[in-house]
Length: 537
Ligand SMILES: Nc1nc2c(c(=O)[nH]1)N[C@H]1C(S)=C(S)[C@@H](COP(=O)(O)O)O[C@H]1N2
Ligand SMILES: [Mo]
Image (cartoon, rainbow, N blue to C red; front, top):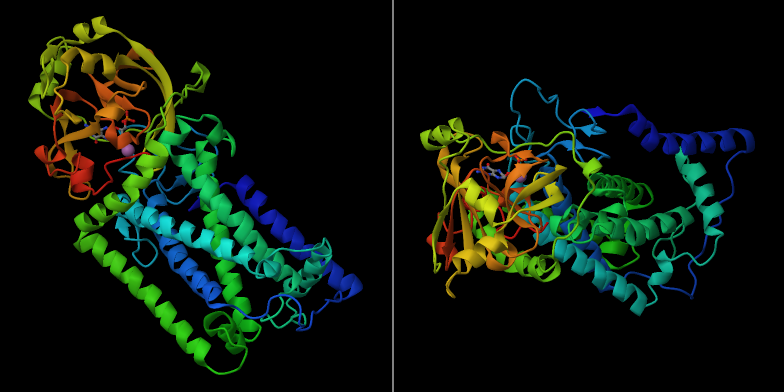
């Protein structure tokens, strides 16, 4: 693991300073007094069932989110502050590998193994499954969180979390001086009151950390960022959003560790009774039921892991039934329009996929694709075969756009080519044609074995194919499309993730139904890596 010294300083310095200041105060002035609130008749007392349940459900989904999120991270184990993801500019690198310059090093080559104890589902390049668990979990986590906050304010429980005076700041500092110098201040009974630092921390977790997690997640969405260019500018850029998403996760993990430690230190039996069974006594029921709850979380995680490996298709279909409609509603209707100025073009652009090995493609490439004919067929009124010159004559559009790979890297490039819409109007799809399928000359490669299940392909619903930034590109950054990036022709569809953008296109087919192609999931990555078919985020 590598972490930039600058960043480490930036992250660790405030904490180190706070600890140093606490020690200085203790040594020079002694421990400050901590006001202790006694149990009183006013304000909320105890924890109602809805609060105890949402608190537990929150933990359940938080664990799933963190574990699946780590798995996603390890598919591109590098974090950057710049949007280009140039190797060598990471602030955090969770792989020992420095990207080689003398050979092609694809982003899939770069993904790392993660132990299933940490990651969900674990092992290497399981991002398809990890995303299903992440997105399924996030819907329930956010739903549960909204319910929690609504009930907080519908009852008097909000008074526990929301400070009512600025006095909380010096009071919280006084508590901090105790903790940081390894002293325990007198604690209020949490059944009635929290101490000032505790209240401030809980407030921060619920009203700052959780919203930040929710806001930084979508800053990684191609559909959102290529529709609203200002959105990733809020954090700075798309990779800063990704880095913050990671830092917010780290903060959640640190909070959970500190929180559990304090629960244990400040009266474990009673504290567990408070939040698990809602009583303020010293029976062991809170601990027993709490252990059962943790056991359930463990079982859910084991099941999620097993399902991911034994029934991946089932998980994929569940996600399709639940996540895809939400994505369709919230993100897919956004028309991608964002463009970047020429000076923003990335100096380095990660690659994915292996160059075609077919003799046909090699022969065409040897001759600069002079004999290349794009075959457009299927449910259309007028099928065509077009040379590169024919495609150029049909019209050209250039766009400088931000590419998002499912693995996490991004890059800006200028693409030149024929808008798909023009081609679609030319061939006139029949009313039954619902999807456009792009067949590649290149083989899809089974990542772990290097073997192939056949040619790479992917497909788009007609609506996405008709978007203004859906392009059949034959140029990249003002030059003929390089072999590695998909020559002679590759797809750009800027409201989707990179895996939808088929390179080395051999032919385009219009079909009525996904069932008619491959394994029927919509593309090679969907068929064999269990990716979701709609890739707006
Ligand atoms: N034929 C083919 N097309 C493909 C792939 C592939 O493996 N084979 N990989 C996809 C993925 S995952 C990405 S991110 C982009 C990468 O495009 P680039 O290599 O030009 O950066 O191509 C997409 N198109
Ligand atoms: Mo990708």
